[in-house]
Image (cartoon, rainbow, N blue to C red; front, side, top):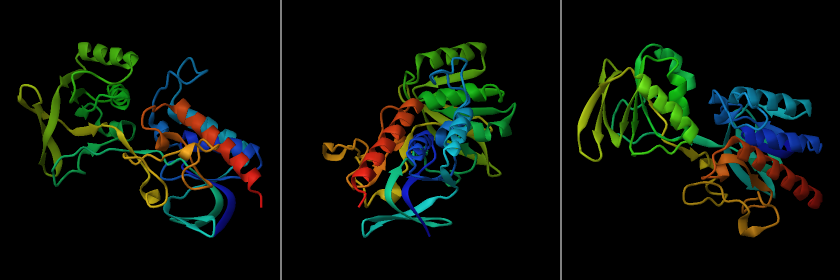
Amino acid sequence: MIKNKVLIIGSGIAGLTASIYLSRAELNPILITGNTLGGQLIESQKIDNWPGEYRGISGYNIIKNIKKQTLKFKTNIIYDNIINFKIKNNYFILKGLYNTYISKAVIISTGLNAKKIKIKNKFYKKGISTCGTCDGYFYKNKTIAIIGGGNTAIEETLFLCKIVKKIFLIHRKNFFTSEKYLIKKIYKKIKEGKIILFKNYLLKKINYKNNKIKNIEIKSNIKKKKKIINISRLFTFIGHKPNTKIFKKIIKLDKNNFIKINYKKNKYKSMTNIKGIFAAGDVTNEKYKQAIIASSSGCIAALDIIKYLEKNKK
């Protein structure tokens, strides 16, 4: 059993930023990594809007630099995954896969999980990916399909263009919701013939042969036309949902399961409805999915905890 004043759950950019500020305040925080140190950002190949990095920088390098920075200030990083969370005698008890942790204050920065596409298919898990960086290289010079039209979908499509032979990009709307800068790049690849675009189309069925994807059936949601596309892999980037399942019975969540902060407009902007439990990053924010915003919210949560612990020393 490990006891500590402050625990941070989640090691994305929000949790890592919070750990820097808490360490500099000599609160010696424990940062519990979750499944992956760095969270979603680590999968981004190139980020052009990170302040100061005018040449662009990968998410991996941003996380690597911040990790070095927080270790410099003696943050205790523990590789574990929290599976249970409860409150007892004004203490927070967190059970992980390897350890149990007890603390007086907690920052939840558990981020988001990729949504799965809803389709009735007994082989759902076979041949479907939600991470181009992870699985793209297995399909070098192959033909794949991608479903999605937001920033993540477009970024992953541009990345996979460098690896695969051809991409069928399928989007249920008539317009992309990603940044215009990325959309221009996509249309350039479409003009080059690297990408074949299907707007206003929905995935209807996945067909398999020998437990591998043979083809997919898509259908227009306007003209009701059907098409069959032969592919080796299907990648889906259709949004994310907050990783808040284990907190559901304790903390107030909104209708989409994001954590409510600044509860009842108290003076701690990042505090939840439970005193001593704070939250930061994408797990609190449905609208603005930007690394710089997640980082700033980690800073706010850390500053709030510093004031909270100072006031509640006894």
